[in-house]
Amino acid sequence: GAVVSQHPSWVICKSGTSVKIECRSLDFQATTMFWYRQFPKQSLMLMATSNEGSKATYEQGVEKDKFLINHASLTLSTLTVTSAHPEDSSFYICSARLGTGGYGYTFGSGTRLTVV
Amino acid sequence: GESVGLHLPTLSVQEGDNSIINCAYSNSASDYFIWYKQESGKGPQFIIDIRSNMDKRQGQRVTVLLNKTVKHLSLQIAATQPGDSAVYFCAENLNLGGNTPLVFGKGTRLSVIA
Image 1 (spheres, helix red, strand yellow):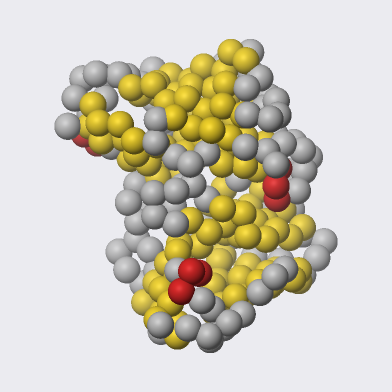
Image 2 (cartoon, helix red, strand yellow):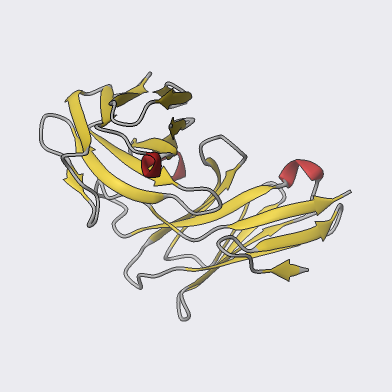
């Protein structure tokens, strides 16, 4: 089935540094990927929609200059958290759409970001 | 019983009992709904889906019910097992045919008592 590989699974970084999270579709082409953020004991909140070859669409309240999204190929989308701060510590999850039906939304395993 | 915490309501059930998890969705125009299971530190795992032209769908040990009149979705798990302990989210999609994202509900933590 459709698999989305997300790396790293966890990362610890110092405040002020940048962190890149990768999301790869392994056996299908994903023209659209979605990035979510999840704080402890909360739901997944959509951050942005990543479209291959074009600019990402950000949700209200998400800073596009802080959360840089690049979707340069049909199998790779990256999220870079720039100048990370402790409040950016969260669980980041990517998702890709493949056709219709429940299996058409497949999720990565998530990245636990801790900013110290 | 069911309790509402600061962020995530919790449902506690005895092993072997049936579980019912409820969800109120937000958009009356949503036409596709999915239930996900999320274990700690992992991404969401697909359980079952339903389209808006249906009001019930059954899978293995799970049933989803959709009431469009009151914008309510429920997940029923039969003979709940310890392995069912997790957080469950409903998700809605506005347009089944387009590349629109899923919008997630608040989630419910299911705790199975052995």
